Image (cartoon, rainbow, N blue to C red; front, top):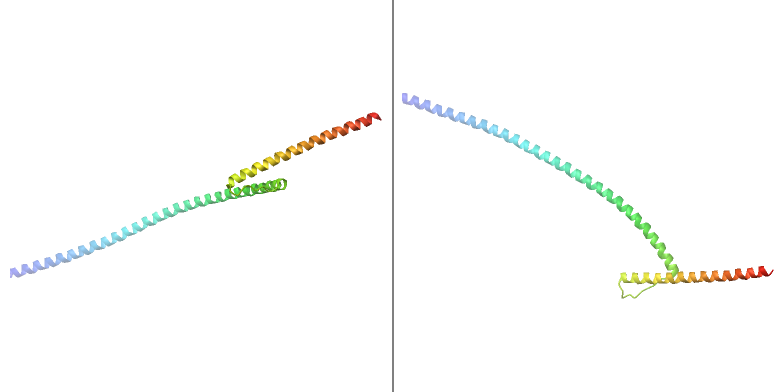
Length: 159
């Protein structure tokens, strides 16, 4: 009987141990799950902070680029206005030159730059020729005026 009692006692101690181990495992599992949830929450918070930081950096970059775009737009607007004024002035000069000298067309076999140089040279030659003609006419006018002045003086002196 003592043997049976010992067996029962032994069996109950094993059962008790198994229950204790089960409770211990259950407790540890709950702790692990809690820790895991906390860890997940911390990871999520860290990722949120990183995303917020990245978002702030992107916003700063965007604002910086936006400012540069506005500055560039203003510069382009000013340059466009200057180009329009220059273009208008050049068109006026071109109109005046066309009125004075007429259109000159060089050979089509020349490059655009060569054509422009030839046209400018021809226009300059014509301009200097025209200036010389005007100068000669002015000198002739002066001589004629001096001649008339002398004639008038002679007539006045003879009176």
